[in-house]
Amino acid sequence: MSEQRFEAAMRRALELAANGPARGINPRVGCVLLSPAGDVLAEGWHRGAGTPHAEVDALTKLPDGATRGATAVVTLEPCNHTGRTGPCSEALIAAGITHVVFAVADPGERSRGGAERLRAAGVEVTPGVLEDEVEGFLADWLFAVRHDRPFTTLKWASSLDGRTAAADGTSRWITGPAARERVHEQRAAHDAILVGTGTLLADDPSLTARTADGRLREQQPVPVVLGVREVPEGAAVRRHPQPLIELKTRELAAGLHELQQRGIRSLYVEAGPTLASALVTAGLVDEFEIYLAPTLIGGPRTALADLGVGSIDEQRRLELGSVERLGDDLLITARPLGPHSASPSRLAAEAE
Image 1 (cartoon, rainbow, N blue to C red):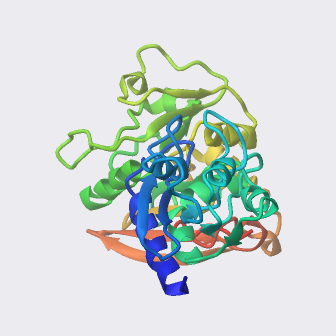
Image 2 (cartoon, rainbow, N blue to C red):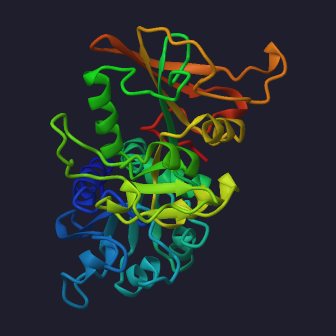
């Protein structure tokens, strides 16, 4: 069968994968089963945790024996572990599949190894077909699995002199309507939004994603509060349409790992200077979104506190991604450089 036929089937599998849920612990995966002549026998995709994986979904659409000698084209390497469902590698072997084509290797510590299992059973395996396209499609999930934490974006809005509030703590509004609307778009685009208990107790934020006229957007981030202090029963975040996650820890890496285990792939942080600085110092920020307003405030209310930079040689350099004008304000997107960089961009996961 030609490489072009495999690529066409992989693009179809990618289309099928897009039908699955974009959020959650499991990846979106699509599968196309081809006859020895290259005709499509069946298609499948994964519909979320606890449901059949894409390969099994496709296999169950055919009678027993219909897949003998067939080729399975799958966006992700077939899994090799038993969770809520059985190993897809074993299902393909049992169905008589003789060739498996996949795009991206499974990075999961428990689920990887499907290709080796298939080869051991005499199945021909072709990896890497349209790998770059599928890597981009699965970027958030791949990053979360490879790094044991969500891709983390730190956002703040400040004056040109780097102040996020006046001396009395008031901060509404430093930026204008266009910038604020973009923030709510970004909230909706992420799986979860994180603040510390200090910000929660001081500002009582709702952590919702809203439209310009104040209505709730269809997609809402999961609200997350990190810290050992209690969230008051009457806090606005307890009325959030998504259930609140409370991370009762000061261990940042452990807290982010817990979020990854809960299926959070992308995290939007709107924290005060203490938590924001701790995340930066720990190397846990993958992207910065900095909204700058053409105003001067002065005073002590800075976006970041101590980062452990004792000399200019220790400064934390950033790579400028983009600068966008939003009304009178600027949005600067940047990423860490050097040892503090985990990913070249939000849309492309780091290669192993």
